[in-house]
Amino acid sequence: MRILIMGAGRMGRFFADVLSFQQHEVAMFDTNPNQLKFAFNTQRMTKYEEVEKFNPELVINSVTIKYTLEAFKSILPHISKDCIISDIASVKTGLKEFYENSGFRYVSTHPMFGPTFANLTDLSKENAIIISESDCMGKAFFKELYRSLNLNIFEYSFVEHDETIAYSLSIPFASTLVFISCMKAQEAPGTTFKKHLTIAQGLMSEDDYLLSEVMFNPFAVDQVENICKKLNGLLDIMKKKDQDSMHKMIESSRDKVAKTILKAKKK
Image (tube, helix red, strand yellow):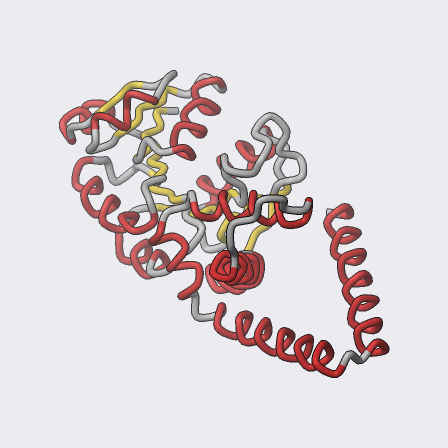
């Protein structure tokens, strides 16, 4: 299959490597020629005339989330109506409406890992979401692709995806941002602090717009309000030095961690 990848960032280059290894004819398009210096195993394109000549059968939009819709709008006049368009965005804001009005078949997915933390040589513990409203052929392609990467695949609607992301991303993002805002330099940091610092470094390497969009997810407000509620409860326990309540909170936390890990293993 002729596949055009838009955006020569880390995920775009990852998909280019995987798909070219699977014997697809892959081209990468980026308006910044400097980005393409790091793209291998693919044709490199910066002009729309090159895209027209390539005539892709599938377009994977992997540009930074701030420009996802803009990138789609710029490329659509230069591809065939038979082409399937797709995105791998972690935030789907505006995409459902765009797709439904585009006149193209589409498939929207979210590989829930990134080069920052994931072990790209073993993705068996990582997940991917495929949006249920997507075109059947598009869904079949990405299911086969993600299975080849040993990913755990889930199928959610656009709304279900955003609800899930509000929980799985906004809670750790908000907690990490609070940790960073309270952080000060340590000459002799402990193990727990260093682990949190590693997470903080990874989060701060992400695109500003992505972080903002994750936190602006309409479903994220309830999650952050719940964090505040739990923190206020913990603060009250600390002020009162209430050992029994602290013990109950710790035991409840241990139980939740154990159940979450067990559920993840079953999947």
